[in-house]
Image (cartoon, rainbow, N blue to C red; front, side, top):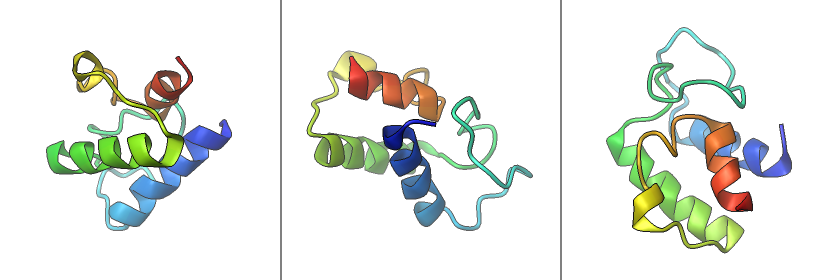
Length: 80
């Protein structure tokens, strides 16, 4: 995973240390919602983290479940 992906994964692990999805690790392609790492409230917290940590502004059009479905999708938002 890229440096951005690793920072995002670490943020999620810190925010949800008790995530219950049966998946112990977050991969770039992991479905964060299905695997229990993300919910709607954490989605908003992660949005704030991404904007602050990486100095990007995520347009409202991209604040969707699809855009935040995987760490890889989120990293792509940062790098676009």
